[in-house]
Amino acid sequence: MMKFTIKEWAELISGPISMKEQDQRIFKHADLPTVKDKLSITLLLKIHKHFSDWSTVFRTEHSIRTPIIQLTPNKSSLHARFTGNWGSNVGIGELDDVLTLNKWHHIAYTLSDPEKRLDIYLDGEWAGFYCIEKVKTNKVVFNDGPLHIGRAIYHHG
Image (cartoon, rainbow, N blue to C red; front, side):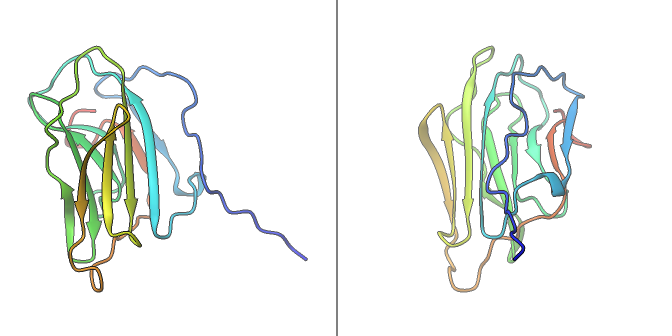
């Protein structure tokens, strides 16, 4: 009898790395865990300056934004989004908390279609959520594209 193994989690970057604003890491979809209805991404992030434009922490392809976290212009608040079958850019517009320069921040992005919600945690505290209201018809659209960490094509990394 053949046995199949399903990846439930993957550590993509195991040690600290330093990325400049134009640097990027791309992880192929085949190297990522299988995602059907929920996902969670955690990371430690330290930023050295605020940009006047959007800065991308991580994202997938542009047409399907599941998952994506960007930093808002000028103050670096978390902007966490995803794609649903009712809209390509839904989620949390801007959290009240901003990232402090030159300080490590622990960020967790969790998205669940069965629970119909996106939750963001900052430094171990629940910082915000987005709830899907039409629970019978609206669904999260998950992506089978690569995961980009850092620089986006149109925004700072």
